[in-house]
Every structure is written in C-alpha cells, then in structure tokens.
Length: 258
Length: 144
Image 1 (spheres, one colour):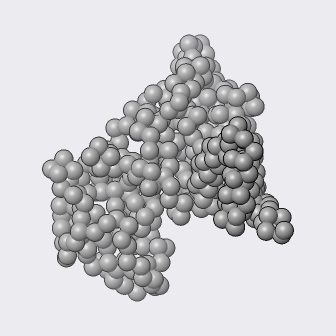
Image 2 (tube, rainbow over the protein chains, first blue to last red; image 1 turned 180 degrees about the vertical axis):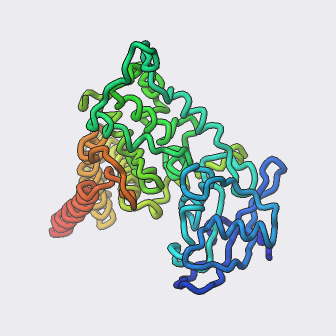
C-alpha cells in the first residue's frame, strides 16, 4: 500500500481488457477527514479482480485485506438502497452497480461524490438531500383517505400510473445532485432529486397537494434554476430521468402542459 | 474553506463540459456564448457611443474595428449569436416540456428519454448553423 497526495484530477490512464481470469488493478481511494482538518490524499492498493468484480467488491477487498479503516457506506449491493454513490474515474456512479471491467482501465480512482459534505473518505453527508426531499412532501395529500372501511381504493388507470411511475423509482443515491452543474455552485438549489420527486406527486392524479409543492419549488433556487444540462439523467442508475421530470413540471407551471 | 467542507465542485466543475455528453457541452457553450454576447453588447454600445463626439472620433473608432483582429472578433460574434439563438430555442422548448419525451416504464440499460436523438440533433444543427454563418460572415468581412 502507498499513500500519496494527489489532485483528484490527476488520474493515470491505462487501458486493459479484463477477462474471466484474475487480473490485478490499482485501486486509488481518496482518503480525507475534513472534521479533523485532514486534506484529501490518495491511497493506492493492488486488487485482484475478475470480469464480474464490482468497484464496491474491490473496495471491500481493500477493507478486508489491507486497511479496514477505509470509510465507505453500502448496504444492499444490488443498486436498490442508494448508499454506495461515489465518483468512479471522475463520474458519479453506484459502486455496487459498476463493474471494474466496464471501466476499461487498470487504474480505478474512487472519490466522494461532489456537492455533498464529506464525512470521511468515501462517505458523504445526505442531510441536505433528505431535507430537500422532505420539503417536496413526498406523500399523497388529500383530505379523504383510501383506508377507511367505507371507501374503496383510489382508482387509477395504467395510463395514469405511467405518468409518474418512473419517477417513483428514485433510490435517493444522490448521483444526480452530484452531477448537476447548478448544484456545483448554488448551495440553496433544491436539486434534481427533489424537483423530480415534486413532479412524481404533481403527476399523480390521486394527489391534491400540488399548490403546496409548487409554492416550495417556485423560487429562484427552485425549478427556475435548472438549465436542462441533462447531466442528472446521464448518471441516474435507475432510469428515473430527473431532467425530464423537471422540464415536464416546468411546462406544467408555465401552462404548456396539463 | 466552506466550499472545501461542502465538497462543491464550484465554477470549475460547473464549467467542465467533458463528462456528461453533448448536452452538457451545449449547456457550457450556451453559457459561454451568453457571456461573450454580453461583452460584445457592452463593447458595441461603447463603440457606437463615440458618434456623439463627432465625425472624426467616429471614423477613428471605425478604423480601429476595420482590422483583421476586428473581423475575427465579428466572425466569432456571428457564431456565438447563431449558436446561442438556435440552441436557446431548443432549451426554451425543453423548458416548456416540449421534445423531452414521455414518461414510461424504464428498461435496462435505462437510456434517458429526455436526452433523445431530437435534442442531440438540434445541438448538432445549432453547431452547424453557427459554423456556416461564421464562414459566410468571414467571407464577407475578409472578401473586400
């Protein structure tokens, strides 16, 4: 193992074809602890990988065999929990969902996601993301309830469902917020995750709370700050397409869409 | 200090057009051309305002702009103007929810419908129109 100070952008490039046999890659892990005033450095490890090895498995190999103090958040290992978002070779991605072999490099650099405060190493603080998500009132708002004995469930056609279904697949991994150019400069911006969730409920015909949500997002740090760069949709691992949700929501607010 | 703790990419990250496809490149060029056109507008107002100082001052200013450097600058302004307009129309329509696709069941490998071929085509058309306008502008400016 070697610990070297380096700029995140300094990334040695080397291409390799990983076959079914075991290959060895260099895994560069960003190590930092801002609360202790520790600047970011890179620790390098030689890790054996196979065609199916994910970046998360490579990091866990390091924890098991070289340095158990590497801080990384993970849980499901199957792109369902949204815990292991990080920057892999410069782009935000889920570590459990990214195979080393598809990176086409025998040097893999992992860093904490941008636009989130670093807790330690690869673990970032989701406080702002969760707080903005809550601000969007992510639940059906209406006075009557479908759980009273007299009422039946609210009827919804497959077409009604399709209007919001894809946006409900958000796992709150934060990759979209990390890739967003507005999030990079505006710390008050709600972010693509929150705005897409606002549309998820606005497009739901069972919901009656549109006005409450629109009041929150109709702000200079809200929906009007999105410039449709599309980076959020580029990195979304679940096909949520936040850029589409935001533009549809803006179209609705401007009166172009019902 | 605060930026380091929040790990925000800042302007450097916002202005990096290389990582997220042509849509991010178009976003970056749109911002850059917007700033360029603003600078040109200010310069243009300064240039034309010299007319209030009389004919001699105006002719002196014209001489300053009728140079190869001035022509290159104007050619760039033509390109910026055309790209900014054409791509701006695409972005404005997108902001109204037009041409960004329809929500549906996402299927692996989860290609985003909002980043569709129509959007990419419009970006390429904007680039092509800007290039054509610059070529025509340069031929007129340098032709004499």
